[in-house]
Length: 349
Image (cartoon, rainbow, N blue to C red):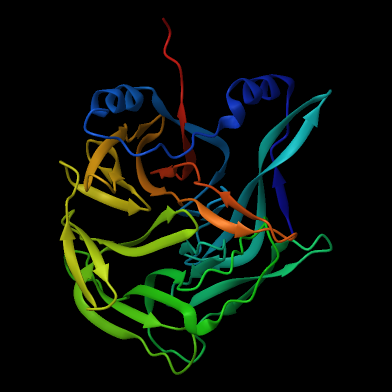
């Protein structure tokens, strides 16, 4: 496996330690009384470039393992993942982003709550990253891939996946527990965009050959999976974004979409609990059922074009203990492929 590593210089080490390892966690939901404070918080957030890596699509696991397709010129780009690893320089240690080539290819990446990555190729095939438990018992990707639906001829453009039963697994955190394939749920768009950019939507209950894709009423441009943790219970819901900026919630029982509120300006991308709009980035408030402004959408390289976020999950450690991991930071890429994460800063007094 080829690895591209960030080298830790003395200045970078001091900067990393001074900024708390550069992570800005998902904020708690705002309330009506806290709106003014939220606006102040939004003004102190900024996009921090990762300084390494170039991406054409991006996704992230709850433990901030970022997966991207690279900027090589092929129809199917190389697939990489990044995770923070401790590196030391002259006695100063910090979490440093390290990129790993996972030997896959595709033009779009997605991930499930267990950190299992999927790459969609130019011909619409969904490839799943394979993993195994290491000598320490922790599950990690191996650099090998397999067709997730080898018996299906449907062309997939985007896909989201969740497990209806939670086995507590998360790559790089726990062993790889076995999830019943019949417990998997999928929502995907077909490779048939209309003149507006919306595609047909398909739903699937289970991964097996006897679980066919079912077309549902409605067409969207982009899909997202929203997580919400209630104690030990994880709620997972499929959402969709229309080419006109409308936002939709998918109901698995009725197999229909219902329209949800949207940010005040045109919305062009959607991820777990966050939306990218023309006038900024917005965060979904589950309690108030509204979008609150989170931060600006401008980076040093221009506006962000895609965002990625994953909510917190409960995992079962190797020793059997249960722990909460996440949520992830908010990640993004700009028009040039630069990778960013949302970071808070303290304005000068």
